[in-house]
Image 1 (cartoon, rainbow, N blue to C red):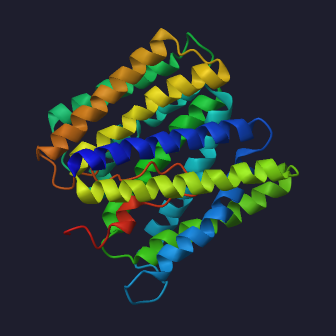
Image 2: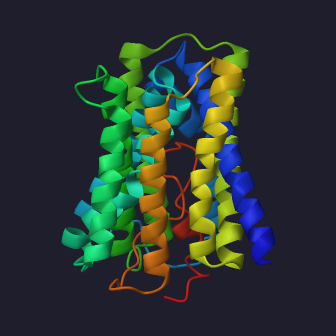
Length: 314
């Protein structure tokens, strides 16, 4: 069953990568705000089905309103920033920067979760962040807004993941899913006043596919994390760099340069070390990286941890 779960996770991340290709195509015509709005709108019926099945009783008043609000802002920010980065930067370069999220989770877990990070994990974080510098190469290549957008997306993913780890046991799943979805559609709806472009049927279908792909891939990750250890499934996210390279070369004539690949390798190696360290126990009590169960940059996706609430032993 573990092998099947790992294969399903690989398929899920391949679908996520295909989702990003569609975003890149749509981004040539439409603003990221508009893509996020429509993909989020299309995901509403799918997420509603999950909410209807929520067996917990209670109201929709958050137990931790400020944390829920901050997390909701992160959920809105991460796809908008990532979608913009996909439209202006090569796929492989965007993925390399997004892969910094586990490193940032480790750092943010210190003030937010009271996590004690050992020397080895902190060295891994510093090494990974040096990989980010290798990818961006400040002073050698011209920094673009897309670089900052990708790093902002990674930071937003990390912060929402740590917040979820902090409050996830006390907040209802309906609260954690509904508020970000409502704020997402509302904020992007306001932004569309300034950036709206008429949407033809093929483009509308593409936005619907973005929602469907992200939701379906998230469900696959639920299956994988339910049937295999997180330490086996989590590293599969790095397979996206392979898809990014293939899609970039075949579809967009984007040939990743040596420094991007070197930097990505450093970031991936650091992330894998942190995952392995948390899986062995190390000095961590919270294992915040292993609890990051979805990419967090897709408007139509949901946090896998929320869907697995009843499956978790905690």
